[in-house]
Length: 354
Ligand SMILES: [Ca+2]
Figure 1: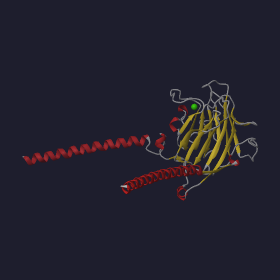
Figure 2: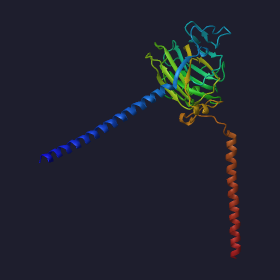
Figure 3: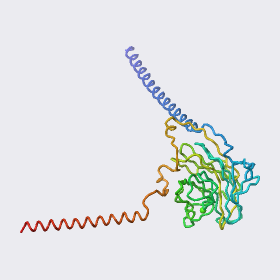
Figure 4: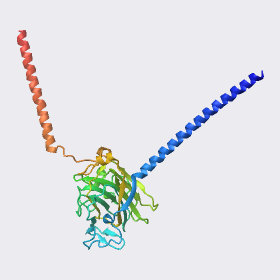
């Protein structure tokens, strides 16, 4: 009797131990799974951070106070043009006066593959909202020191343009609030449509209330591994807000940095306080190094995703007209020949019948 009670207790104890060990095993599994997840996430975030190991300010590509020699010394790395002038606090591209154009251009082609440009600027004037214009642009382009209709620079440019557009020319479209900051990649044939505020060629952008602001205004352009990121810091929070993020951007090296501005009937002071260029030290896998091709003309992979109108070397209007004409004529000839053949076949059939 005693021994059977002891046996049943022993069995209970065994089953308890078994359940306990199963429970522990499950807990252990859960813990292991949790640890693996944490390790994975940590390694991912470290890998993300590891993409940008270090950044170095490159003075030869930067425009910083006290703008030594700018505008008069041959040893300066920058040139002024148009109405641009240097003061101790800024480079004023245009004053708050009508029909002015001014620019500042780097003399040294940018040969870095991965870089970050931080721009501090100020746009201010007497005009009330929407009675001011036109804005300013930052450039990284093949050509430099050219006048033109795109914020004081040439149209059909080849390279990158970042526009701080302060005047809504396309006033029918109330889809955005101005000032509006946007990105365009020119391939030498694409045209910036001033009347539409460049909507048809815009790769990305955002509203940036940067005019007559009491805060310091900054934006940042980062280009690394064919990815272009635009961030703004304009509301005094001293933190970057994402404005545009474009992948598959192919930008040649050897282009020139610049800043330009234009006023028309409406005007503003357009000031550049600094343009600081940082070299990014980026790790590349051997495959990425192998894939690193030499880019001749700027382009974006999957252009359709941005609805960019690429002016391809396709058929001209005249070519298209003749193609359609000959196609229609060909079809008529075929139809006539078909009818003749059918008529003869019918006639032969009738002859045989008789
Ligand atoms: Ca505009």
